[in-house]
Length: 210
Image 1 (cartoon, one colour):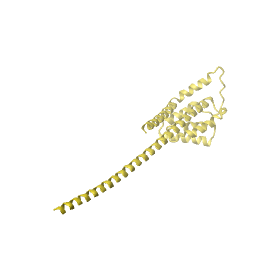
Image 2: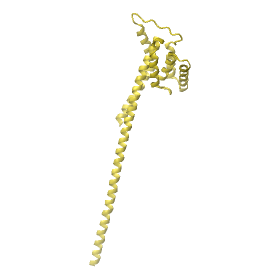
Image 3: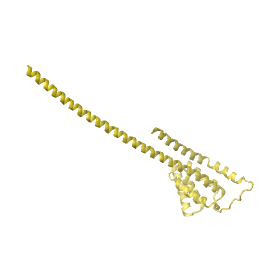
Image 4: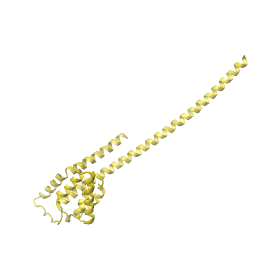
């Protein structure tokens, strides 16, 4: 039981570490990725996407979301959801998906983020290379998060089943002990009655002899 609890705690710790590193290192990783993408001998021409935000704007949102208080987080979430709903486009959907993919706030939803990011990456021709990099990076992060959450749920369920089994076994042992105690009390009472009967007979015999 203790071993499974330790395993579950380790899984959750790994999950926390992965996502903390993803948030802190997100800007550096994204820039490095973009540099590698552009570092080929014949770099692909960057598509011109009217109105597409710079990568720094997305990363600034994510930084404020990760570092902000609950009120700031709620404001960022509401803005991104409203933009994605009222002015649907790959860029507004991406901003919303990145907010959903960021752990540590009340509206984080890795499953929803995964679906949106896959839909967004299916429209690569409408994205800049920076947006593709961001979407790909965070899709990988949420997929890992989902795997870890599923494993944590499995461990909790397994632990719960073990606890129920142990509780049932303990209750059975207690019931057996109580039944044995009742039988012992009955045996003791029967023995006391027999002893009393023998004592009465012996007393009667002594009285008759006198």
